[in-house]
Image (cartoon, rainbow, N blue to C red):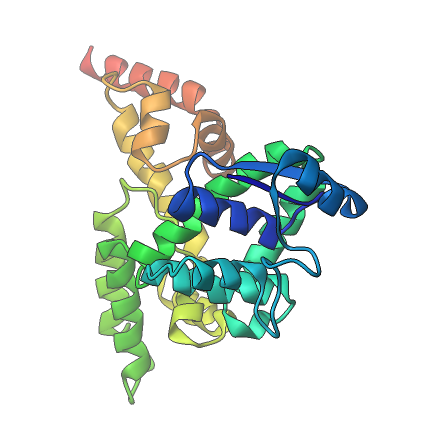
Amino acid sequence: MKWITREKPKIDRIACPWLIKRFIDDEAEFFYVPFEEVLPQSKALDAIPFDVPDVEFTHYDDRCTFDYFIEKYKITDKAVHIMAAIVRGADTDRHDMASQASGLWAISAGLAHNMTDDYVLLEAGFVIYDALYSWAKFLQQEKHTQSPFEHLLLDVFRTYLNQKANRKNTPPAWAEELKNIIQDQIDTNLTLSLKEIAQNLDVHPSYLSREFSKYFEDLSFGEYIRKLRIEKAIQLMQTPQYSLTEIAYLTGFSDQSHFTRIFKQQIGKSPSLFRKNLLKSHSDTRS
């Protein structure tokens, strides 16, 4: 089957070809032409026009062309029906229809702005809609905060926030527990921020930030994590077993340059110079 529609697609004219290829005809061909050429070219190419006025495959009432394809071809896949509300909301500027609609519009508009070749845009769009389908089918209940460590951190904060009484001069149990958790997990890349925690707990980030620093050496969450990473790095530097690149990785830094910058900020020397002096000191002690 051949299909033809208007040039410069964004939502429906990408979503519909994806639906056709994945559920109707995997050998379908698509043509994008200027608006005034759609109907004449459809006859010349023997292609079915879609998403233009006065053709079968178009908008009806508050539904978009994607909806009509689903109805016409009796597509019953639940994930596709979940996608339909998102596509409809994005295509008709009714972002209240699905929380993901505004995101789909933003990505689609940005993609169309960056790619002027409609066929390259179509290929990229298929990646987007394949991902959206996978989310709708398998990942709807998945949350960004998923790792056991992240859940553990949130549980600790929830315990603290639910306490009705707070002892003023004694560090609360949650602070000690949180300290132990962080220490146990310092070898991993801790990406959870206080802002993310605050969003999950529905409290203001500045409140959590203030409470955290009270019990963690007057340091912010990020500062405290970096301090522990540097302390761990110094421990690893005491043996030539690991290279500086490996130490940066083992202590959760994104790369060696990031590790070097933070190390110099906190210690006042580069990791290589510090390690050289450290190993020399150990050698002098042994002799």
